[in-house]
Length: 372
Image (cartoon, rainbow, N blue to C red; front, side, top):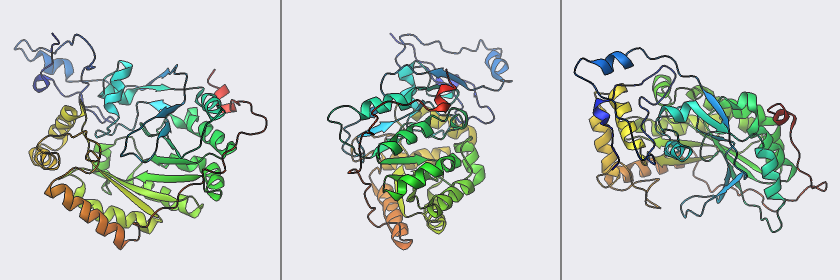
């Protein structure tokens, strides 16, 4: 029988610059070691002065670049994720539980133990050249942010864009990093052929709240600046007002939409907080650490949108929730986007330009060669 640790007895593992305050066990492990206090406050002493956690990188040996999905409530069927795990450390990240498939915790491991695909561009080319491949918009970084800090040195996202550019393959990007501007040369060129679109995620305009929720992501002001620079360069850009967390950042919804529209965003998307698997307890622990005065209120509001639970994985319910509070959030979002002109149907990207280059050979970029 699997032993479950008592989360209430686990001291906080909060570290400066990291999002999670716990490191829950891998749910697939057959045995779990639980912390134990012998009555002499030994746990408090052991965890009282924790060192900084360094980020480690491990090569991902996966032999494919494209991941496919058939979910009926997701607007794309394929994606490329150069990285697994994300150093941004967003406490609310729905992708955290996927780290358990690698044998890592969805907690601090998710933001400190990253894997990367050094040959992701070469693998992608092989898949694009397969007989019968039909181009549809490819999501870049659907699981974790393609422009997290490590991209500055590895440049794997850039290598993927170089391939998509050569093949005239449409791409959609969602990021909360201004690092996307480093690839403005490629994106602006692709945008001229209706091959690129970028959504920047803005969860709050409060820099202090952002630092707690997403400690290593760009500041809200820098993200709005990224929208403005993308727009000036001719890259269709939008804002993801996501996730909205009842009782924590949802009061800012209209202000975020307005700020993004003033920056040049043309479209907007909205997602209600999701708490799959380990994320439920992790988010409770994070609230208790950072917002003890309102933790109970926030959790109760979340339950109002999830039929009394903290999570609802059902298709067509998981992104928007249900109930009076969820309906109110959706109406507020619809009104704000209508007011600021972000509710117009977006123009589709051009899938008809896709073509395999004449040389037909996979190319490894100079930045990739430096990894070997």
